[in-house]
Image (tube, rainbow, N blue to C red; front, side, top):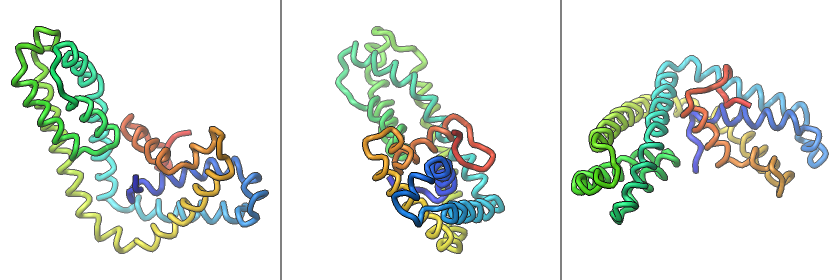
Length: 227
């Protein structure tokens, strides 16, 4: 799972919190990971944050991304309940599970494809599914969800296109921050291998945490994820 540009700062913030706590352990394993390194990583993170704060399009993109995650999260419960009905009615399909999995991975393009196919199954089997406990307005609910996610996804794509010039102009800055993120994550995973702390230094876990944070509509004052 790759890091998106708008995820660099919150991931760096999370790693900085862990590194601050574990700095003595890091330094005992490699003397380069000292207070000067910590300060340099903090300064680079703040430099990128300052650039992004002045980027109005990024602010809009982050809000759109958060809105998209919320729309995905709102589907979780009704799709799970629908899956129970599909199973009870013996309708053989994995589409409901596919939608949930793709939303969980924030693959909204894939989720929309599965959602469209699921709507077709629900429409064809409506009477049978209602007889097995499906709500009568389920088809309408799925249609509304499909339209809302499509609109928000298109909006997000538009902002991403607009931001290409910004990220291109600041690509070296992002690369410099990524060096810190990568170094700390790799070192932490090795130092704390087999311990719970290792998860704090695992990039996939950090990306997932950022997604959950935004999906819950929360983001701390520095733009990172909450402790």
